[in-house]
Image 1 (cartoon, rainbow, N blue to C red):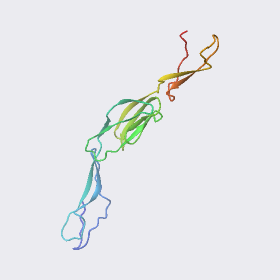
Image 2 (image 1 turned 135 degrees about the vertical axis):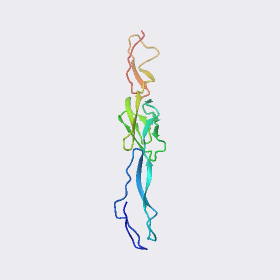
Image 3 (image 1 turned 45 degrees about the vertical axis):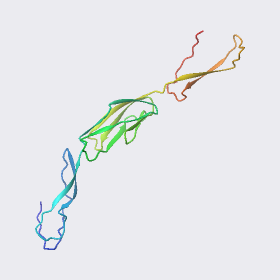
Image 4 (image 1 turned 180 degrees about the horizontal axis):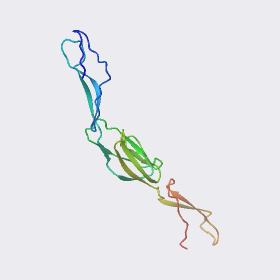
Length: 183
């Protein structure tokens, strides 16, 4: 509180630092001006600093704590912010293993490679965090296409045939197989 005297018709000016209201655990404050608006002196007046009030995030959680994707599959993680009346609801998304799972700034996850990754959502000041474990499955072989070269309808006994195998889909990540014969 300061008291100053001005002559009738003069306009007061505040010479101090911008007023500050200390943040609480629940609220942040930003100086927004004076009430009433500062103008020429016509009577005794008291000016009061005005502040915009911002409700802080008090916590956050993810809808799921674990999920499974396939390679190149996408999904979306949903974060819930507490309280729902929080003024600023911005959060940061991070994949702790981006070679397995990537995430964008809206919570969209994409399986990149087989493995396990942890995805983290945080309040902007990182006071609150929540995590989801994402497992990305390997792309398994769905079938094997066998082709033979040098085969005729009158194949002679003891003659050789060259077989080749093509794994399908051709981008399978699990490419192990063994040759065997039933006879």
